[in-house]
Amino acid sequence: MNTDRIVRTFVEYFEERGHRRITGSTLLPPEDDPVLFTTSGMHPLTPYLEGRPHPLGGRLVNVQRCLRTTDLEEVGDSTHLTVFEMLGTWSLGDYGHRQSLDWAFGLLTEGFGIDPGLLYATAFGGDDRTGPDTASLELWQERGVPVELTVEDNWWSGGPTGPCGPDSEIFLWTGDTPPRSTPTGDGRWVEVWNHVSMGHRQLADGSLVPLPRNNVDTGLGLERLAAAVQRRTSVFECDLFDPWRRLVPALWPLDEPSLRLVCDHLRSAVVVIGDGVRPAGTGRGHVLRSLVRRVLTVVRRHDPSGSLGDLPDELVRHTLDHFRQGEDPHVVRRVLLEEERRFGRLLERGRRVLARPRFRGPLSEEDFHYLHDTHGLPRDLVLGLRPE
Ligand code: SER
Image (cartoon, rainbow, N blue to C red; front, side, top):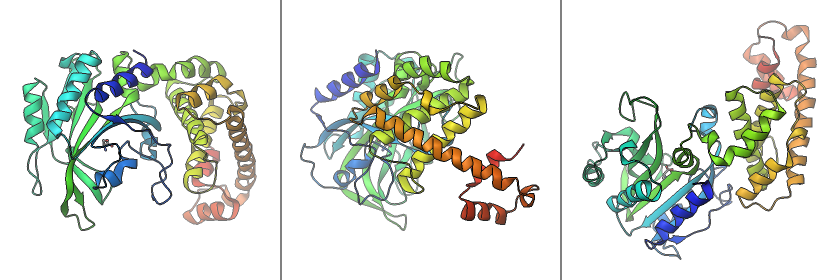
């Protein structure tokens, strides 16, 4: 089952259960949102989760592209991507947590054919503010899915304030040998689907107040699910990455961790440009700039003459088409190449400045500040230019 079919199966399953499909937004949240990029499917729905009536009613389903810079350092393992897609469902004061989990179990096992023996769930065990999530616990016990109870790991909140609540996470077994432990103890249990029972708002002093109605917010990572359904060992091997895995190794001689990073960051850079962002020194443009520079640094470590000019059009087109972005592929390539040239000039300047006798020995904090403020040389770049 390819990812297009996975998405269709998911959306139709929930449409058959009374959900209306809402259009997933771009990576850019609305103007007044302080967050740089959309980080989850629920993000654009926050006002409705807080009580505003949604024009399409109380049962919603969508596919939302997300970008998480918090996961940047983890990209390269089997499960993390910078840009990923989240399949989401919402009950805005309609059905409860138990119903949501029951449908999830049905879809995973019958719709996607996943062996129920490969599932494990976690649920909220209760703390001094809120009791244990017995509804989830009972449902999983009735369905024969083992459950681990935790406290911190099963309390979801998007930040220090805002909607929050206990969640129940569904994990899939991805190992070749039997599990050593439960999901919190063995990383081969991969979290795929989070169901949050969102009935509270956290205030700045840490206290909880009830929301006007009890919601359920769920998010399922598309690439993780695709890897599992397609029996691949990492998100980089699901069908979305097929053209990347076919074409990138022929361009640059990268080892596997570098190949993953380059494919992830380049694909993310294309999507971010496709959503209208341009490289800059701050904000969203800075995230884009960092993605491109990391790609160039890794590529050139393996191939000093490697250039983004070698990037086949097919990869840019494949990505823009997948995310239904209308940007001209030539514009995307031009943005990438301009950024490469700018980075090249900066590296040249960095080499010249660092060759001065003053910078031959160990660098002090003051040196780093000077290099940054006077010459525009960020710390990472300086460290990358210094001999080991
Ligand atoms: N809000 C939850 C998450 O981000 C589910 O959508 O995981």
